[in-house]
Length: 86
Image 1: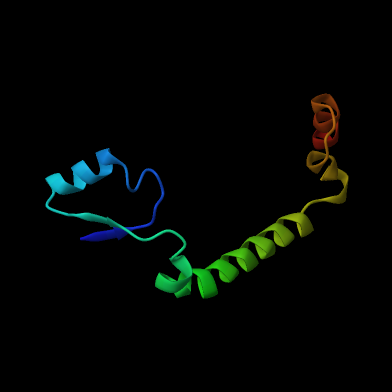
Image 2: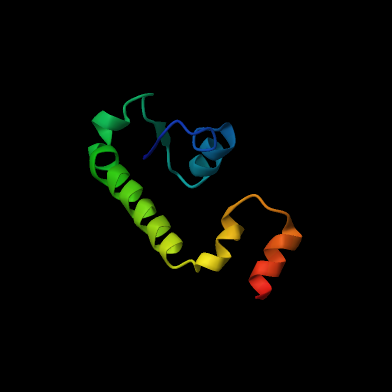
């Protein structure tokens, strides 16, 4: 058996049929059971991924050259091209 969450593509009839043809039964987890059944995902991996995304964004922003910050703002494309070309 393969245990999956309730994401539509995971529990669709097509998915169930495909796995059944390979001799595997799809078993969907109960709704709102992630914190109970997957504590690492919620308690450790979730916060870890959030922190990693924040660090990656911080790194990207710190490595941006000050004269190229226009790329992060809503400005006309022509203006952006001028700044990038300089």
